[in-house]
Structure formats: C-alpha cells, structure tokens
Amino acid sequence: MNEREVLLKRVQVCDFVLKDTVLYLDSHPDYQDALAYYRKHLQMRKEAAESYTLKYGPLTHHEYDGGPRWNWIDGPWPWQNEEA
Image 1: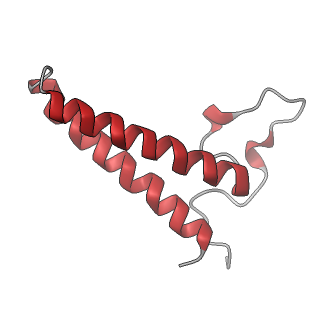
Image 2: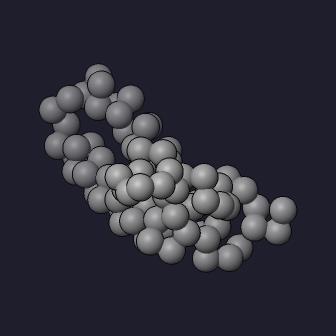
C-alpha cells in the first residue's frame, strides 16, 4: 500500500467507526464513554482527511475551496487507483 492508499484507508476506517458509534449513541445518548470514543475518532478522521487533502486533493466536493475553478475534477479521484 502506498501512502495515498494508507491515508484513504484511515479516513474510511474512521468513517465506519463513527457511523457505527452513531447507531449506539442513538439509543444511549448520555453514555460518556461512547461520546468520548466518538470525539476521539472524529478528531482522528479530521486529521487523516486533512493530511489526505493537503497531499492529494479533496476527498469530497464539500471541500471546494471557493476558488475561481471547480478543482474537484482534478485527478485522481479518491477512489481511483493511481496505476489505472
């Protein structure tokens, strides 16, 4: 795995953990350990996404920087293999 793939995998793992934790928090909204777990992984996701974006470009169109050009189309797309 190259560095790009490692960073993308880190974001994907955090996304999965966050979604799974949300399901738990929906039925246990006051459980402090779950809230702390969510906050921890949310921070990890933010850091991984920021690292990826700085090196390889935006992960989603939501990260459009407001510039004069729609740079989301500049490749490669996050899900594309660099060798393709």
